[in-house]
Image (cartoon, rainbow, N blue to C red):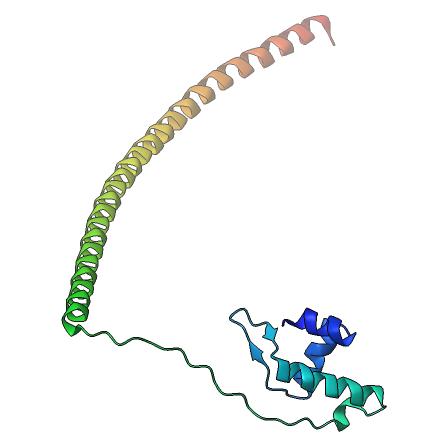
Length: 174
């Protein structure tokens, strides 16, 4: 029986059964999912515990018989043919070596590909650097030419305007 079925038969909750098993350290077996399953002897033991609790005994005062259940052992059939195992083992080792070799060649190819990509990027960076220098030189040259032109234009036009203004103001007396 599982925990909930035992709990229903005793009139308690499943968590109560689980608490009894844990606190009293009862040697109950579990299935492969970790759930308790109870034999008839286990159910009788739990009934006795329940009766003692109904009579007023505290849970920590109950001392059940703590007999360890025998460990379940599975039967493994021996393989009679060692040659088959040897062949399988050899094949596994060959496949493992093949996989390692393939992984090494893939890694080497990737490294070479990355190296060529890096070299290409380095050449692009150096080309862009030289183009940037050229553009900076051209910009500096244009700035120097525009400064010369601006100073010539500004000086000639501003002096002419001042002279005209002075001449006009002297004529009219302003």
